[in-house]
Image (cartoon, rainbow over all chains, first blue to last red; front, top):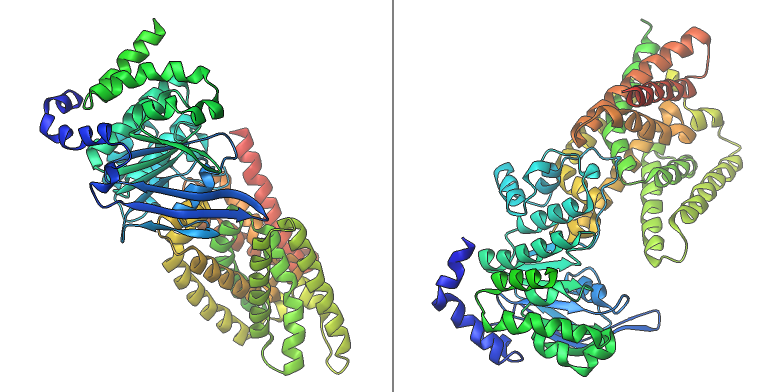
Length: 281
Length: 261
């Protein structure tokens, strides 16, 4: 399946060149699924978010990065409707189906609940679809395990499966690789990209990991209460505001990634694997 | 079997049927203290009922729902921790109820009966009342089962997925308030929470699904009622506490079995 993707230039070339050449205008191409307009959030006198503007287009992967306490999760919670902004607005396309993968979810051992039952709780779905979703995230073998006994990585995959079961048009992932080892992280990011291709959905991701996420995202927003810089990964990583926020040592590590990723739009995954291999060697 | 015993048994089963599934949710949602605060407020409800001359069961429901809503609102402001807040409400409600009852000199109130239950004084009408409440509560629970389960796992995820969180939570509180109004005659205000929590906790180690746990909790609750009544007759012990101790013994057996396995 994966090998077929580069063999279909008409499909990828219609979206990708625009994305690469005009990173700041690419959302003008299609009606955005999400528009955040001059949004601010104050909680008991403290400014959590100020003057945030962003758009998310169809089939786009947007990653919010920023240090701890920079307001990433608050922004996501506003977008999900769990938090009301102090000022400004957040508009989602009407009737949009959102799949949400929370940063953390713990089912206490007090509730006897199997993984597949947990997935059935997500909404109108069937046992068959649940099994398919579990297979998709590579977690079939834990279907009948009690959910409080599975590992952190398995929990992340389970949560992703639950988000996928909603057949989302917008997938919101809050720190999707948290608690997953490095190999698992690479695999999970790869899976997220595959999901975008398969479902044709947009993805909004929160991350404070800087290395791996850069290869799997179309656009990055650097957040530290306000938007410090934004654009494609190669532009952002060269931005002085980025180096200031994360230290300049990071930059060199990335540009290597990006050169490959963005020259070969369709071959993102393969390219990513290669560069991983180079680092190991 | 004597009539009063049969009525007591039926009333006890009627309460156990409700306490099983609702108690299971209370355990999952870690609302034991919340249940306690609501049940303590029942005394205030009884006083109010006597004061304005309507059925105390209705005033008990009204008062505990009012309390449930104010606790929820105050908790959202988040200046006090939940357990402190619940402690304040719980004991203020109990004290206020005791004071209100002490003012009513014209009415002879069986305080001990209210506090610890008087299942042997259950009337035929009480049994019918409990039976109809059972039907209403179980039907409601059936309709909110999936959303309630979803938000007991994670409220935010449920909300994002479009589950009517606020509505379901409110209905659940109403159900708890109703069970309290029904159960206070059986085990009394001070012991209601135990009838909700102990059977559910006892059912946990032997259950593999949420529904199983609710059913086992009901069965364990019914067994506790039977054993408690029997023990109370056998050794002439107070009935309410005997039922609770029977439940505790069953809980200990289930725990021991789980540890030995």
